[in-house]
Image (cartoon, rainbow, N blue to C red; front, side, top):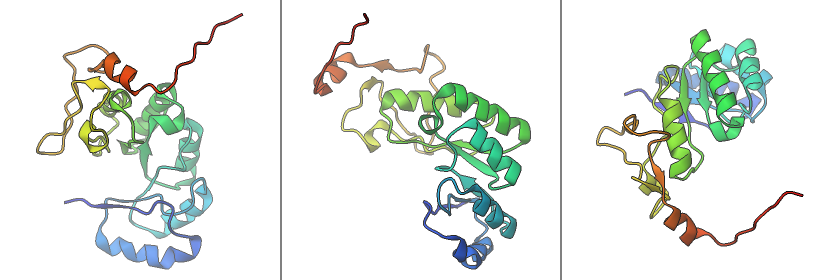
Length: 189
């Protein structure tokens, strides 16, 4: 079973020898071992490791992904649409990685069923070749704001609802209304 480790920026450049020892584990990837945004030190580390680095918090735009690739600061991308500015930038990152043969996976950031629908659609694109972080609605919410709620099957897969338009779920306006704590109307002029 392929295993990965997410370091969540828990290491410093002085931990290189320790991190190099992780090569013996045959990990699929080591995610974000160093401080977010520190592409140069990630590049130095990647040159010392056989294990591919996967960057996450460091990747905030298509330009940052391109910098990562130019520097060889990582060899796998965890793409989070909410972190990179939405679907336009996400599609540019997808195309860049697909064209360069860089594996992608889609990470989540505690989205409701609406955001999850967009992530599922994105993760269905051909450049996403690694399992994503796409969980069931029930993992985070007693009751989601979409119908049907997102489910994960016995093999930990989420079905792409290609038989319905849009993101494949309907927003439950009654649920949104019940959760609304404050409302403000903005008008122009």
